[in-house]
Each structure stands twice: as structure tokens, then as C-alpha cells.
Image (tube, rainbow, N blue to C red):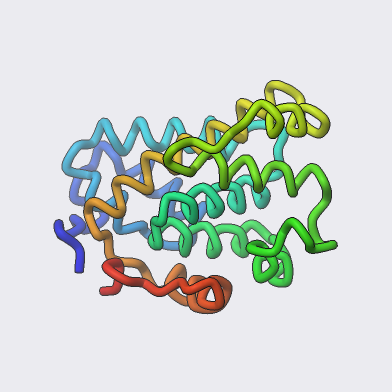
Length: 196
């Protein structure tokens, strides 16, 4: 159960555009953002960071969603794992690929470039950080410096969101809950403290 009740959408007019943009990208209002309305500048800053990391760049958005899922898995945030499974599907990632995500190293569904990006998400989301010089060299074989910064931006974004949602015990919405059950349950996922 959430430690703080989300405010209804529209409660803070100055963030209405940001909430609307998030809803268009996700298909629903995220309880985390509705809670953040109490500090409108946090919503605005998160919207700008989300646009700069997930929305812009040359790395496929579906892959960035999966990198965010791996970073969230490393951090243990069940809320963000479910959101990124749902977001991956919403962005057109094939369901078979989402289902195979935790076996990406051995799966023929992922390219070598995708595999090293997913490993980067897992290592970068770990505490302590697991990114090594060797991993960085392998990243450089497939991604240019701008793309590596883009991928790390996604990992950093989820570092914030993982801590926010775990600290708030944010209630999961219906669509991400269904995606979590569909794609992540075999890995031991359950809504946990994020169950409504």
C-alpha cells in the first residue's frame, strides 16, 4: 500500500502538460507522477530528463525500455520493472523478446549490441556499481560515445525512479501489473509492496 496517496490528475495545473505527455507515452497516469505533483518542479525536471534520455537520441526506444528494466531489476524495484515491461510492449517490442529478457545472454532474439546494452543496464543499476573497463570496451564495439551516454542516461533516470517508487511503495497501476505478471513472474516478480 502506498505510503502517500497520489493526487488526482489535474490537481496541479502547472504540470498538466507534463502529465498529459507522460500519459500519451504510457497509456495511463502513473501513480508515481501523481504523487510527485506535490512538488511541481520535480515533475517538470523528470519530464525533461525523460525526454532527453528515453525520448531523444539514436538508440531504439524499445531497447532503452529494456535497459531500464534491467537497471530496475538490479536495484530490486518491482514497480519500475513492471512499468518497463509494459513500456517495452507499448513501444512495440515483440512479446517473445520481453519474455526472453532474463536469458538475453543465450537468446538468439538479441543482437550482440543489444546484449551488451542490457548487460550495461544490469551492471549500471547494481549497488555497488558493476560496470567494468572490460564491459566499457565491449560497449564501444557496438555503440558510439553519444549512444553510451544515452544508455547511461536511461540507467541514471531509473536510479532516481527506483528509489522514489520503492521509498513511496507506489501502488502499481493495472496495465503494468498485468505486464509484470505476464513477463516477469517466472523470474520471481510479484507486486509486493506495490500492490494496491
